[in-house]
Image 1 (cartoon, rainbow, N blue to C red):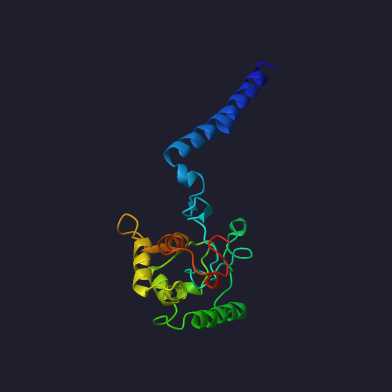
Image 2 (spheres, rainbow, N blue to C red):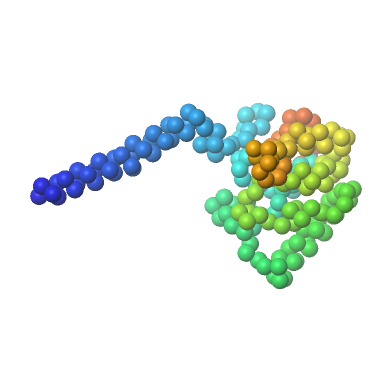
Amino acid sequence: MHILRIALQTALVTLVLTGLVYPLAMTGVAQVLFAKPANGSLVSDSTGLVRGSELIGQPFTQPAYFQGRPSAAGAGYDAASSSGSNLGTTSAKLRDRVRTDVERLRRENPEAPGPIPAELVTASGSGLDPHVSPRAARWQIPRVARARGVSAERVAASVAESTSGRALGFLGEPTVNVLELNLLLDRQFGLPLPSSRAGVVGN
C-alpha cells in the first residue's frame, strides 16, 4: 500500500504539472510574448473586421483582387483537410485541371505579360499556401488595375510594398501574401465597384 500510495501521488503530481500547470504557463507566455501568432495570425481590414489568417490562403475569384495558388485541401483552402492532391504528372485529372486553369487565367488576364507563372496552376503540398512569388503577383497587375480603374504603376507599387524578402536575408525566396496585398489595395484605392466584386475579400 505504501508503494501504491507513492505511485498514485507521483502520477497525480505529474498529471497536474504536465497537464495543467505547464500548458497554462506556456499559453500565458505565448499571449504575452507572441500574441498574434498564438491567436492565429489573424488579419483585419480597415474597419477592424477579421478577414482571415496570414498563414492560410483563401480563394479570390473577382478580377479586382490578386489570386493565390489553387488548393487541393478539401473543397479548397480547408484548414481541417490540409493536403496536396497526390496526383502524379501522368494523371489525366491533373492535366485536365491545369488545362482548365490555364484557359481561365488567359481569358481573365489578356494583357498579362509572358507565360503564366507555374505556381498559379499548381497546388502547394498543404493546399493552404497564402503566398505567391512577386513574379506571379506582377503577372496579374494589368487585370487588377483595369478592374479597379487605377494605373498599373500604382498597383505595382502596392505589390512592391507587400513583398517580403528572404528570411534572415538569405533563406528562401521573396514572397507576397495575397490576403494582405488585397486588403492593402482596399485601403489604398477603396473597395472596387460592385461589378468587380464577385466575392468580397474574406468571403
